[in-house]
Image (cartoon, rainbow, N blue to C red; front, side):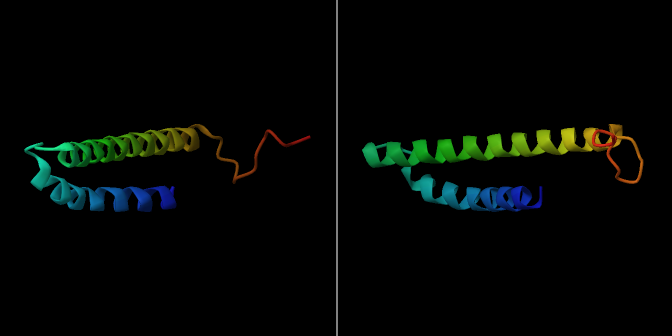
Length: 80
């Protein structure tokens, strides 16, 4: 979870930078403007998808650990 959280922080940290790069192209005058805006949109969608995935995994991980038996870390699945 730590690496994924760090990656997510980097992605959201770079999001305003990508917005600043795409901002001059908001008038969509030529093909370069269109490509820039499409790439910014795809970047935004991927950042949102990564966030949803991270939050889902975080919630299900906490639910799994909350429902697990508190036997000091010993697993009942591997016992003879």
